[in-house]
Image (tube, rainbow, N blue to C red):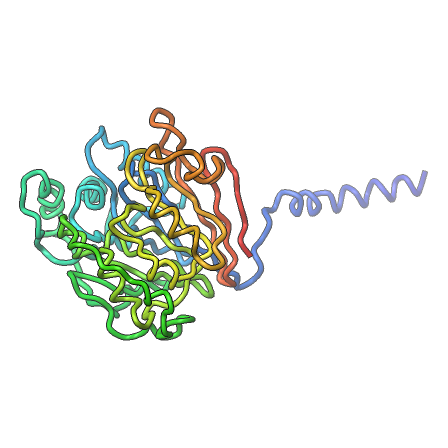
Length: 351
């Protein structure tokens, strides 16, 4: 009886402490940093949200406008999921509608501290090409805007972001501290130039290299095939990467073997649409990269057969009626990362 009483007293005294520990969420090891990247479905445009553990944010492009603001809603949902209330930096890589289309709408929805673009002009003045730019220009005139030169850094706390192309200018010297940067690129021996891109705004694209600890990602927006060659031939000025965000949506206009094989990324993410990007040429170049592991796509490509699409688990959106899903990448500073398909929860880790 006395033993039973002693046990009950002990339980009463320590039960609150036991419950407190049971309900407490798991804690990250002290000093551990993280980066979340959301590849948002903009139907073959681009909108990529970077949120390091510092809480500052970077949005690379804004997708296409119109369509009842569906794409703006998807970007807003990713921002909400990330637990932030403002965008610290928004890069408008160039002024095609599928990259600048929601800039004005987002500026109406939440604070945007800083825009980054290639300048207050567009090289395509046709009404069908300039409408999205004109809407952005009205916001730009009142905003804090920077026009970077290649080699400049974007000062985001907790993230290293370096500009490697802007307004038709390209990086001229190797990126310091990046593995492989400055090395002779053996893939350049068979370079075949292409005719000048017929949509010259792509030539103006702001391209970036993102570094987070040991992790590296390359995103050149819609930079052209021949410009890519200048960045990596005869010497690779960019270095090697963990993740390659496909240039120009995985079309044959960009994503040269010299760039893709020189970057040596083991994972590629393609911001394609159902009938835009994902071409056989892009597929072949990506999959012949030394050490390549996986291709993730925002959409199933209807331009090719099933054998030239990744397995379904690696595709965020499989059809044109049930879509709007993102790919979310979670990165640690030691270089490990995981990608989650928000359509079905499928996740793969890369060590």
